[in-house]
Amino acid sequence: MGTLKGVDNNEPTFSFDMNAKNTRLSDHDLLSALEDYAKVVNFRCFPAMEFDKWANRRCQSRTISERFGSWKKALSIIGIEGGKRYEYTTEELISNLEQCWKEIGRPPGNPKIGKIGQKISGKPYKRIWGSLRKACEAVSKYHQGKITREQLLKGDSDILQRRTIPLDVRWKVLKRDNYRCVKCGKNPATDHSVTLEVDHEVPVAKGGTNDSSNLRTLCYACNHGKRDDYD
Image (cartoon, rainbow, N blue to C red; front, side):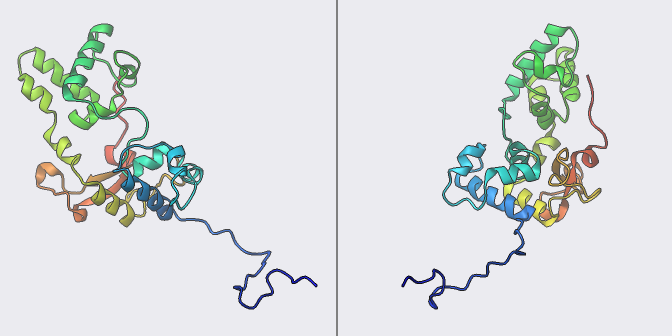
């Protein structure tokens, strides 16, 4: 006579419970799983397909994408810009800006600049000069002889210092604030239009440091007041 599978006393007991609940991974669990692989590849941008091939992954990329709106959005939360190239030299950015300006005969704005010239979006300009408009103002001052080429390419020192927040510190602040804007409470898991940023409570220009005690999580809207729609 055959034996029924599962009646061996040496086997662990399993309850075939019809009411068993589906365990939902928390936002922190998903982002932590994503960060695990990011550490393996030294925080470079990587596609979802690559993540799914990793033997030690704790979840599927689809779960992460659905929770945060997209794979790119999830990567951005842990400090990785997913998608198009994000880093350009200041020389490349200024050269492109001058080219676009000449092409349309006026200072290019968002999103125009992403459609002409080298098709570089306004984000890299914001990271170095504070906004595309400020980059245009700097170019204008340079060609009027009001600042040197060196000053033009230097960008905004305050902005550049903000960029030096270590990824591990940024990640610590996001986790501490539960991946939510500390002002309005919004988070990308429930509102896919939300973009989180790590902000200095005491500005760098006024002596603020990159210590986590001086950092907080804000959404783009709260951090910038309103969208820069210069065009």
